[in-house]
Length: 361
RNA sequence: GCUAGGGUAGCGAAGUGGCCAAACGCAUCUGACUGUAAAUCAGACGGCCUUGCGCCUUCGGGGGUUCGAAUCCCUCCCCUAGCA
Image (cartoon, rainbow, N blue to C red):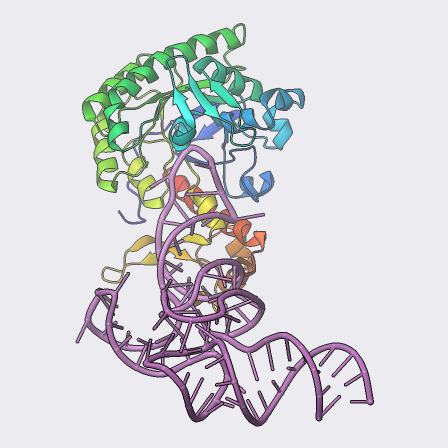
């Protein structure tokens, strides 16, 4: 999969109450309301249309009621574009060690206070609604790759479906009386791990529901690239053509290109920002043999860049590269631990992914 | 000149007869990171290779005691503080 893009037959625009969004698009992760180290204007300058925030983390701190009282997440954070909120479903996976799943919902141990927090499908809807989210995600049960997790994949899919029905009911209750143009959107999430039968069943179920978008959850959790690609190929012909498809958690350039070419419209991922803060950035580099281009990850902390006067990527149009920050200066900032390094690298990476999306838009 | 305390790997700092190629921290190098418990984490960090719980060279310099010394003794050099 090179940098060259194949033509895309889909041409879909996502209508949110805060404006239209061109697809495909990538959402930076601003878990707690901010993309770490970046001001909203800097995020916008990378070409970002939609921001992702997290219901679980904002519920824990500062609490959705505080956010609501201060005018909602948009006013609170100064992000003016559409916001998609994750439901807390991912935390069922990422915080597996400190949670307990029941049919009612999931009990999490708040690491800061030690107190137990119960997130139910209804609660997740309420939190996201109170935050002022424009795209509300269903609360799902995400299974990992370990044997015990694989063994409960079927159970988790069925629970995810039951929870989706509860999410939709609660969503209707919360948005009762709102005009279509004023209400947030709601997306359902399909699961099924690496089991194709389960995946198909899950996709069919989610598409049978009153949801505005279809999200694919539970991929990019450690399986091989081939396994993920096989699943995306398998699902591609079965999507409802009228609704957007959101592949959750994916954000490696190569994977995004593949996914877009297999019918995916939306992405989010921590990689451009977390990786950026850790010094890794993407550049386009020629292949040694063919000379065609490919995505290459480099680490700016490397000694190789100590005296490198070039920007991260000469062809890049991001703020960091266009301003002319050298690799040597960025390496220096990383070495001395200046947070500006992470911010400048995050800007570059976000622009990198957004540019990929723009090629297909 | 006297007295006291010191000199350990790039730096700081443990160790005070064998389990010491030498804890730990920093720095350095390499690598991870996919709906953020992550500005984080992992590994390497005297030299060599057949990568073995192998070999070689180390704990200011030199000499000695001992089966065995970073650790004990002698001597020299240097540093810090106080006194002359």
